Length: 477
Ligand code: NDP
Image (cartoon, rainbow, N blue to C red):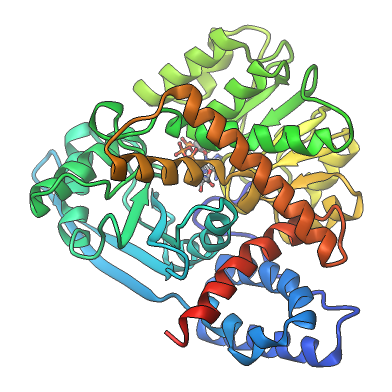
């Protein structure tokens, strides 16, 4: 199966395609990239993310030499601050365990650092740097005042008891509390960090600082959380797909969709697809995937939510519960993922980075998929993206399509600051408007810079311009 384990990406950073640009821009970008490669060895995901953004930004540099003079690019690829620390804790048998904790404070030009924590055994500096880098542009696209950051640990919550997870979270926060704050750095959840983990982290922060503030988002509803935050990333990815379809006069009604993952993003992607009359066909976890030709309906989704969020079980159980669906385990030796080889209209990759490779993309396109809205961060390899662009399908890149989660985190921060709570309808309507605005910003930037319909360039450029201008205003800091 082609899906890379989180432990090691199979992707090679691809080269910047500056064809058509002046020799000066090509040379400049090549120099910046060479320096990034030299300074960040063995961080393929970070390089992949930087190359993708620089490819788009080269279009901007042709018209705006001032960014080059101010060395904005060289500064934006360098984290403002990196924290790496020991996280010692004691498991249920009384044995000391040691994990590594990280926080990447990437860019604060337009607001406090903002971005989730990932707890997964594969977490390392390069993966978190790629995520923090992406977050800078994504947060800018939301139009809310949020800088970019990311953090986490190689701790694996799978198979741990609640007490062990609590001890780990308390130790993690015992170091981190001195570096974060509601006006400094506001973390949230990501892979392996849901409501349970945010609760334990918040509890320890409150205890150590003796203050009740909006230092984390994704909080419980009765202690400062926002309605619609759990739903926001999945709902947002579906709203983005609907906006893309609207450009062709179409809707999601009656469309079939392949969805990967079965965590937070995947679950609410499926829920919103059902709301809008589409038919989700697949879900997965790191052990395998289910294909349900009859479609995943509300009753089946409720089963998945109970399975994943409460019992913390495996997707294989779905096929036992719902005859007619088929479970296929991961084949680690295969170089394609059979989940991407079913006939469908849309795909919502919602598991992890580089989960769709070039061969998978070929299969998706051959099977009729013409809408791809990325719920996960960087789920498509460069090879795959190249094919989406060449085929002119509706491709919503992660930093635009999955920005709904951090957008509602921004709304949670606003509600915490005002000490009031908006209704479900109010937050959902704001989320919907933000996703429409992000879509319009991508289309607008792509048009202005001569690549109409290219959401990838559009998202990178629109996200970059706001941050770059703020950096210009604030001087060399
Ligand atoms: P969860 O931990 O809730 O769920 C992750 C899901 O993906 C699980 O089903 C997990 O399976 C599966 N998965 C992880 N790695 C692999 C793999 N290598 N192969 C197949 N399946 C895998 O995380 P989220 O839903 O929060 O995050 C999913 C993606 O969305 C990530 O890329 C994240 O960065 C991105 N994202 C999340 C946001 C949020 O608000 N939560 C916001 C924006 C982006 P298993 O249980 O077996 O590990």
